[in-house]
Length: 437
Image (tube, rainbow, N blue to C red; front, side):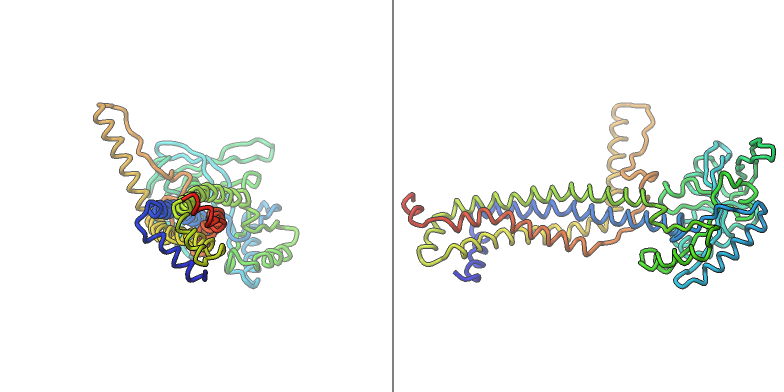
């Protein structure tokens, strides 16, 4: 029995009008259905992680940070020193730009409330001239320009929390240690020039951007961090470590130099672990669906015993029969892949619209139920992806390589679960079958 004969025999299982055929088609549909959520999970997790990682690297930690731990008490001298060091760093091959920054925690008071906040004292042109900030920040009101020493740009979530809008005054309250050791509060008033968001509230919810020079007035050395943020040509390039070492050699004992992976190790590890767990759960669904293929083939083996005996009687060998059933399992898996992959990719591409539709549907039925029960309790709108922890909009990217791996893995799994019933069919003894028939 040639491979072509095995192929044609396998095709017959899908064309003949038998109960086993229905089982095969049902198994094919189950495999396709199980692939859809797996692909959606891969697309959403990859896109979400890539979007979060990009914002953390480009807007928060930079590609490399050179953290100074021996700052000069004279603000003007320190700013001049940082500017000079940043210029030297820019001359290193592979470095695109370098920015001085001072950041620390303060208490911010607006019209309606107070809140803890992170002040980022940055160079005046960082928010407007830096391509990453211009691209990833969405300006909801005002501008990103820090026009005066008392200008401030704040995060959208913070503006809502403290009730501050464009042109409003906010007070930043920080701690100062006097020469005699006493700690006293220092209050500085700023004018809100802009309200922005990068789409990831966990990152930017508490940010307040102020001019670098003003930051030295409100943030004490003991409660703030002073560093130079470095941008390279590619944050994921192996060349990043070479640049890090060169910056460390240049700055010597004045700075500690870290790359973005070292600064965000726990966050990035958490992202990867969450993705692996999600994919593992979805893979188990595919595994269960693939077992249906084995069950369907067992049914075919039992149903076609007499036919198998006749084929063996006229010269079909064990290997030919076995290969026919393995090919049947392969074709069932292939059909599932051809059904599930395009649907999964389409759902992944439209995931933002699907989430929005589901949120509207859930909120509609909740409101309907509340109206029917005459409840006076105020309903809190349901958010499937809480913007406080997830991105408000998922920047969808299709991971072609991973989807191809899923398709290939499904086919391999389909073949593996087909081996046992295929071997059993190949070992059937024609004389014994005929005698029982």
